[in-house]
Every structure is written in structure tokens, then in C-alpha cells.
Amino acid sequence: MKNVGFIGLGTMGRALAANLAAAGHNVIVYDVREEPVKGLAALGAKAARSVSEVGAQSEIVEIAVVDDAQVEQVVLGEGLLDAMQAGTVIVIHSTIHPKTVRKVGLEASRKRVGVLDAQMSGGGVGARSKTLCFMVGGDKVHFDQCHAVLAVSGQHIFHVGALGMGAAAKLAQQSLICLNRLAAYEGMVLADQAGVDMEVFRQIVHLTSAQSHIADHYEQYGKMEGLAPEEARWLAHLFYKGLCPALELAHELGVSVPGVALVQQRFEWVLGIKKD
Image (cartoon, helix red, strand yellow):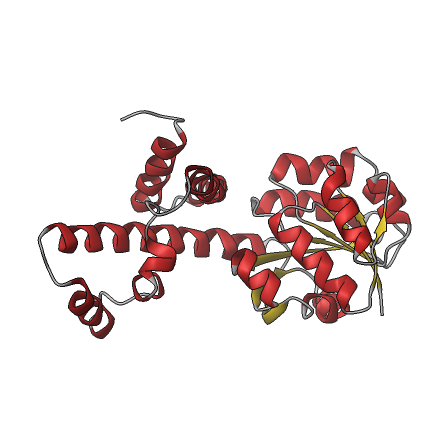
């Protein structure tokens, strides 16, 4: 069993940390909010008072905070890296730009601390059921060092290349998910409003090149009307914040992604960031 720190106890972080504690690892957790820390402590984790305390007591520190700025603040600004020992590893789960991962990795290398960007897919359901898919970038030695910890919550774990490639894979995959959701929504609404038998139409979609995982599970993934307003807004914000670095990366690479820009605009409309 390993000494594993976890910083950021939102929907995903809380579930992953709970899985680690249940698996028998020595888990120390930190979040700016007291409630999730107390909840994990009740499950056997140790509550830390600072990110530095997490770093000082951990062989592996997993981070699941909101965005690039928070990742940099936790690792470089609040003392996590300064507190960690040579040979330990930081595992970043946040959906962020590859350049942020590389910046953190460069600073960490000066202390001989490893960094992985282990991006996740599967959402809260996948985290709780321990069926997540991890896309991991970084040194293979560090990947092997952390594999057993990731396997506690991940059913599929892919090493996708050098540091930053996990983030790049996640941004590309997030773009596909959002475009698939938009396509399924618009196609299903068009058929429904035209009076097509929707049960028959779903069978047609499944058997033709219109098929997608989103379309096959449309009631679960494809539409937002049945969600409570706060849940729909949370989901829109989740996708929106993932598309921001995806569009930034595409611009830097000179890749045209007008569909991604369109779906981001629709999320902006839902969130009230921009009006039609």
C-alpha cells in the first residue's frame, strides 16, 4: 500500500480519494472546503491542513482542481512541490492545457519529482463504479510507479506518450464528446418534432453511420431539458471549461475546429456568458 495525497475533492476527486481509502492505501486529503475533507476523514483518510502537509507525507499526490490557474497555484504557489521529496510523483487529473502540465513538469524535474497528466473520462458514475478511462502522459517509469493507484478507479489506463499528451488526448476527446452531444440533440429533436416514431428512429440511427455512443444512450447523455436547472448549468460549465483549452491548443497548432467553436458558443449561451 502507498501513501497517497489527494488535493481537490469535488465530484471526481472525492470519489477517487474514497476509492483509495477503501482499497487500503494511506490517504491524506486537502480541499479549501471543510465538508468533503470531513467526509473523507470519516472513511479513514487523514485530513491535511495545507497542500504542503499533503506533499510532505505522500509518495504520490493526485490533483483534481478546476483549471490551469489552480493547478499552478497548488503546485508552485502554495508549496506542494517544495514539500515533496525526490522520487515522488505528482499526478494531475484536471482538464488543462498541455503547456501547463509541461511547465509544472519542468519545475518539478529540478527537484527530481515526477509529473504525470492522467486525464479522466467517465464522469462521476465512472469514478464511483471504478470504471474510469485514464489517458496518461509522462515518463514511463512514473507511469509504472503510479499504475496500481490509478487502477483503483480506472478500468482502462492508457499511456499516450510524453508529458502533456494526456492533456492533449483529453481535449481532443472532450471535443468529440461535445460535438457528438450536439449532433445527437439536433438530430433527435428534428425527428421528434417532425413526428417520426422515436423508438424506430433510434433503431435506424443505431444501424446506420449516424450511430454514436451518445445517440445510443440519448436519454442519459444527449439532452439537457430533463435536468434540474442547477444540474444542466453545472454540466454546461463542465464542458465549457474543457473546450476553452481545446480551442486554445487548436489555435496554437493551426488546426481549424469550427465545430468545436460552435458548440462552445452554445454552452456560453446556456451559461449566460454570451447572448444570441
